Length: 328
Ligand code: G3H
Ligand code: 13P
Ligand code: NA
Ligand code: ZN
Image 1 (cartoon, rainbow, N blue to C red):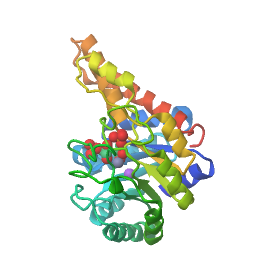
Image 2 (cartoon, rainbow, N blue to C red; image 1 turned 180 degrees about the vertical axis):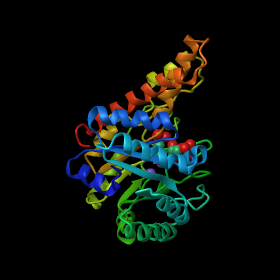
Image 3 (tube, helix red, strand yellow; image 1 turned 135 degrees about the vertical axis):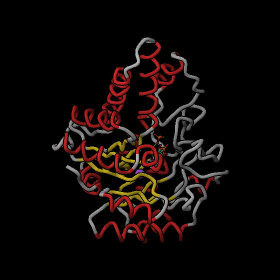
Image 4 (spheres, rainbow, N blue to C red; image 1 turned 120 degrees about the vertical axis):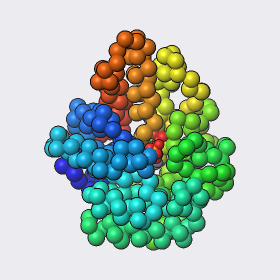
């Protein structure tokens, strides 16, 4: 059934695991996540970005997720709006039936300009007030995602700050986080620790100076009862990059967030781990391989099938790695 995200995160905290929140844009991605969760008995968070709502349309997203809930009535499932850039956008999602919304007030309404603390508190508090009245959950964000070496948000055409970010903006301050949680009363806090959206996160395998898991620990020590969220948490498996490039792709050298680092963060309050890119890589690799090996095929279902299977495999792997087995 559709459940509140707060309920799932409270359960994850009580039982020391983390839940991958998968971005979905179409039927096959929704099916992949659900069948992976079903295989291992995991709870599910499906989330729709602004890009997903633009691509599929909010009604299609809503009803794809509703269909998932109908097809798998035994799986606890959250319909979450990812990166809402204004209270009005979050209000729209809540009215449409989303049980959880992210008010990302780390950036102004344009989704590009870093916002100040007071603005962030004001818009997040506004969404908390409207969501809590109807039992919905709110995720907020303090600090801006981006690469600690370059100061860049990374995502070419998507979500993220424009221009260079300072070290201070790129790492969530524990004391400010405590003030933010107190002032907004949100349910889950996304923090900035050096990750960024998309495939191009790190130019080398990340070490502590560019992926600040130590910062997770400091924040958790200050606000132990707050559920923490990691964005930009795809691991960008090297074998998927190699597969894509083997079959005609031209992806550059890049590194993601190692699963072992996420597992460490789960010990320190991280309960929701956002993953989009890994699914994209898995599906792209599978489609490239299938079409290269079967140049005569043209039935979309034939190439979507291996893509869906590849997405399912990576989702299952993350459920197991984050400790979700049997928790759904
Ligand atoms: O929020 C970040 C996700 O990776 C979504 O990206 O806007 O391209 O769907 P998108
Ligand atoms: P990735 O690009 O690392 O998958 O992150 C997705 C995300 O944070 C969505 O909000
Ligand atoms: Na989110
Ligand atoms: Zn994100």
